Image (cartoon, rainbow, N blue to C red; front, top):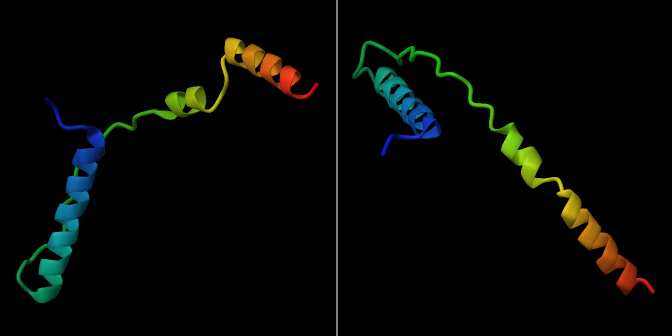
Amino acid sequence: MAARQVTIANEQSTINAMMLWLFRRGDSQIDGFDFRKMPRLDRNDEAVRRSTFEAEEVAAFRVAVGVECR
């Protein structure tokens, strides 16, 4: 199983935070690493899909509201 991109990004952030801490204590001569930029993942499609209704859901909602509002 491969590591997810967000996991890698979080690990890189943790490593750089640790290196900065060591640098400030005088235990390291470098304050962090310049990691290669990872490609941006466009995950917005899923968020939009989950926050909108399908046509069938809208129709069912209209029927239910019509029954309740009589």
